[in-house]
Amino acid sequence: MKHDHDGMPSLSAFVSTIPKNNTRDRSPVFEELHPLLSPEAAYAESLRCLECGSQNSPAPCTVACPSDIDVPGFIKALAQSNPKWAAEIILQENPLGGTCARVCPTEELCEGACVLREAGRRPVAIGRLQRYAADTVLLSEKQDELLRVPPKPQHVAIIGAGPAGMACAAKLSQQGYQVTVYEARSEPGGLARFAIAPYRLWKTPLTEEMTRIARLGVTFRFNSPVKSQADLEAIKESADAIFLSVGLGNDIDSGYPGDHLPGVFTSLRFIEQIKTGNLPQIGRHVVVVGGGNTAIDVARESLLMGATDVTMIYRRTEKEMPAYRAEVEAALKEGVRFLWLTLPVRFLGPDRLTSVECRYARLGSPDESGRRYPEPIFGSEFELKADTAVLARGQQPRREWTQWIPEITMSGKRILVDPQTGQTPHPGVFAGGDAVNGGTTVVQAVREGKIAARGIQNFLEKFTGKKPEHSTVPSRSTLPSLPVPLSPIMVYKQQGEELLTVNRSWCKGCNVCVENCPTSILALDDNELIYVKDISQCIACGLCAVFCPDFVFSLNVPDPKSLHSLEAGEIQKNSKPADLG
Image 1 (cartoon, rainbow, N blue to C red):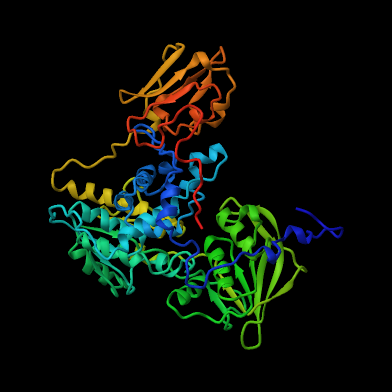
Image 2: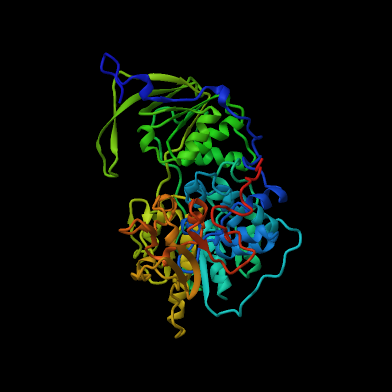
């Protein structure tokens, strides 16, 4: 940390800001940040995909997707001008595919894993393509009939219509189980509906996704809170299994003097007022306390609402900030100011908020989380002018469930479950979503809902004599990697089909292909000639053929329409990036 001559940390250690003339134009309050792609833009962008991936080794973007969407598969459908089939691929794996397309941290997940990054190029805009495809079906006036399997006699009760609950309901209904979802609110979506800023997600497409799930045979009972053990017992009487998608509780109490003043909000109340159309009057000066993605949402939305001075204060440094890096950079570009190593002390004002008193801090010894604890620097107090302050410091755990179901145990704010099945210590009770993961992403909640659905199915089938389902996807660690004799021309196969031909006699040992292979399966032998260490790990991206200056590689893909039918040294059909607007 930088220090001034008096030993105090210098101002540059605390402040990150970009001059406001770098702030880009933003959309109105209720308009989403990234508009829907036009059909032409979606088609052009889909052609940039290399459609990598193979039977043994799925594409990195698919591996990075918590909901296991076949990303190259749905993009290929778009490249063939079939958005309806693309949507079916998406929604089959992720019933909230339209919502996740809007709110997923794609820079950290699928797009962050795109092999085009290995070539120093912009990754495929997977999130926006997913939204285009999903919206084509979800928002269509004509809805096709969904396949319904013969019903099973067992009934599953799901408490909470958040992303985990909706995903679990959809997957169980697809297997024929009778499913009822009990939701305390009048609308589905949980925090995805009420606690994600409107510039990311408005009501659409959550309602449409719920409608599609209901068409699978799921019953939704809104305005049905579970407030007591008696309510829970009434549900258990008619259920063969229960899935808890109950989320977390209210915002953590701040305990700061003055937090009762008008103008001081918790993050959940602040965003919910906006999402329900009751916009708070925030004034020009806004202070946001916290360093997570919700705090970023509040700060960026405040600019949309007319604030001209938005400051985020975080008690640790930028390095420890839990918000995604891409979100921090976007907020900086839009004019949000960050104060690091800064603690709120109290909220000031005669009858409403006028300022926030703060104090600088330094990092001390690690706390129970393993992160260095911020120690206040007394005497460094200062005030920030504020018309509105929003506390985004996390949520409280839902401990009442350990009282109503004594077998349930918790660690911190998380209900403990078997990560492979979602099952709690109570054999008929499963859980997922924020109540289990402590509050992460919508797509992670979807994943946990799907895991629990498989766990519930296996649990129920034990009573019918059926063999429980198990994943058929081979573990990468168990795939064979057998040495083969090297010859001047090597033909490598997957599943008995020729995949890659390597003319080693042309290799000059330049190592370019080794450096650019995203799965690190290429190497030079003792004679500095190229060979493939493990063809089972090849994702058929074709970057070896693209980068090789000596035409050593030939990728053999049986589908003549496939975008990864590559001639040595070039990429067909994907050299021109799409204009995404």
